[in-house]
Image (cartoon, rainbow, N blue to C red; front, side, top):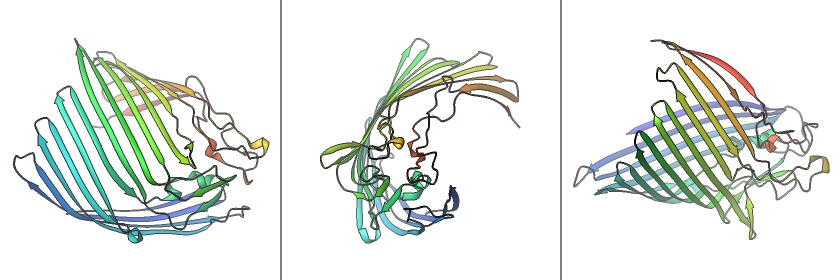
Length: 377
């Protein structure tokens, strides 16, 4: 039997807006294991219960025209459930199948099946595939704090259903050995199909965020490829590429969700002297453009491009080690890139079009830092 609980209290201020949130969460579970056949065959089953109590109070210390969402929001639910999971190992393949059912209050019972297959082909080759379904209850304000930071009108549905999605994933890791060099190539690909998605719609109405159930076609596709070269224990290089496409189809028109870069590159290298007294680290990042909320119908002085610019960053750090002391220093954002005017309507902080959510890049330029670490035995 396993029990866990946590309680938290958050108080935040967004200008004249005050957010006061109190949450209590209790999770209980009763689990049983049964081993059959060979020792690596395992059947698990059990019961679970999740209790969540969230009280969110939003108030304005000064009136803001058009904003009417101040008040108390209660999200209290109990989710009883049961699950069964079976692990079967056949030669180099592992099959993990599972099914759980949970009761989501007025929305009834929900079943979430899942399958994971792992192929441990060799010590240098590992492949995994997974598919399953999932449900979750969205917490609008804690997950979208930018709604409170901006002066957008908020239209929040009174009947938000649990988010629902089917997720598929494929992962592989392949290692190669070239004399003293170890080369590791890994990749991850995930596709998520949402049957219901809770995400603010910023484009349907001017200066408005609409939070409602979306039962139309909504897809998230992600792919990452990583290549690491370990030339020695003191020297390695890693390069990674990430592709992410998140969109909805609204009345047959594809709509990319905002603030998500489709392409990202990163590379880092680390080198230390054989004595380990000196270490040099360098990290490079290239972040592609992101879709931004439309401002086509805003006043001319508040219109910005619908797509952000791509940008790159380079960081460098040097570390000097002694027995118990380390001194390190470095430079961040060596190229000194920063987004100009990251806050929309900054000249009218209480105006209708004030919105810091249009921040898509770094707001600080080149930075130098130095630090000391001391190890206590």
